[in-house]
Length: 176
Ligand code: FE
Ligand code: FE
Image (tube, rainbow, N blue to C red; front, side, top):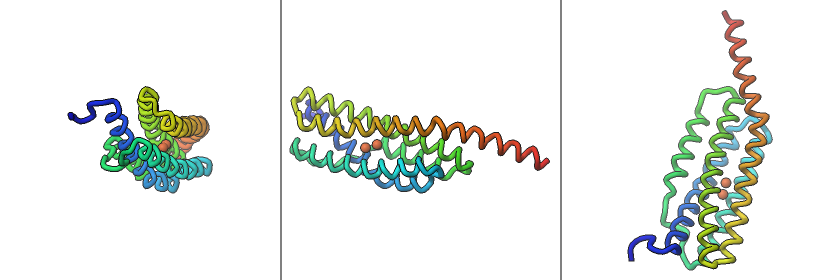
């Protein structure tokens, strides 16, 4: 049978991709928390790390229900998103600008996950896998809530970043 010939095959393949993505995130989120200056942003990354571990547990359960292994795939997209996030961590930026950059990187990750979970949830719905649907929906809701919280943090932290930019420019003027 050709690869991913059925919707069931595609569902399992996309779930493996998400499993790899979540696993990569358990390694990236502690670094992002460490790089964050704002206390609420740091706490947000730490909370989402706990949730991410729970997402992996849910995917284990989902794969058990579907009688498949969660392993065997590397999510290349998450590899790229994490690599870009790490570049930001190494940026020589003010604390506030770095926080804004971390939020931007984290939101790209959440949107990727939201797209993935939304799709697999719908596939499972079509295949009549009710328990799988409810597990995936729980994770999808947490990803969406995380994205919403990041937007809220950005509304104050991006302003701080813009102001830190202005004060740096002022300092440079004073130096002359
Ligand atoms: Fe997740
Ligand atoms: Fe997430």
